[in-house]
Image (cartoon, rainbow, N blue to C red):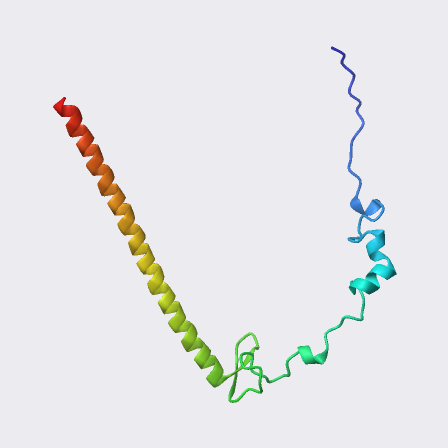
Length: 133
């Protein structure tokens, strides 16, 4: 067995930014202008137009000008009729989902109780059989 002496040299990792391309998420090919023009990555040509943004005062649900507008504390603007209709439909959907979930839990609890009863009956039967012999 050959043992080599350990050196007291301190091993440190170099910073990533010191490596070539360490702070660049793209390779040289990806950063090349030819590739960049084909993919629109990092260019100013692929900007959102004003058509993709809503106008101020439009309802967030109907995307049309708000009638009898109301605003949330966070600043979202809705038509009073649209937000009330949305809240009513969501409330009924949540109540129905809660009913379905509660019935699911009841079925699961019934299944587990049935398994426990069957297990206890099997244990009792095996105990009685062992006592008869």
